[in-house]
Image (cartoon, rainbow, N blue to C red; front, side):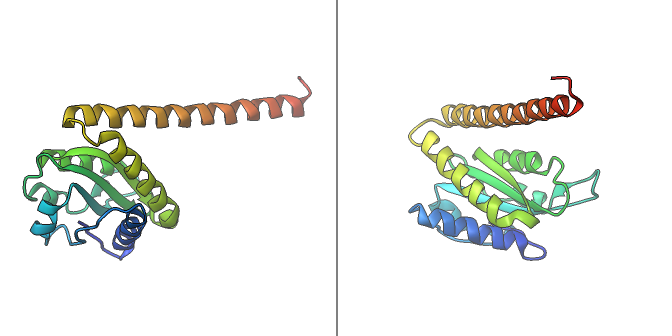
Length: 182
């Protein structure tokens, strides 16, 4: 389900659907959040919800249509993932979207904040993460699935921190070399 203002979020949803179809996923439908396809929701094993971020650059960012997500039918027993598209800064929009999805009874297996200037790159990364998350949560209970997703996210976060630390260390060595202190 998608809510799009300028077409970027819809484009992202179509791109993610196409990438997942290449992974042999069946896409049961693509509808607006405010006009959900109830039959497609019931048929789907995994629900993806995308929206755009509204609000000021520094504060007040939120996923558009979050109240409409709260009005979706109960999705207990279904896995869900959310994504949002943004121009400058998503703030905590993805966290808000994840909470709204969780409130429907679905267990959230991931999400992604996509910069509209990097839609191709971000849709590919989101689709790859979804495939990994689904493989990690197949045939497990919702609580165990949540733990598996948290473990994947912890590894990704650790890898990001390690990469940042490596870059900072290299920059420190370069600065020391330039200053002649090494």
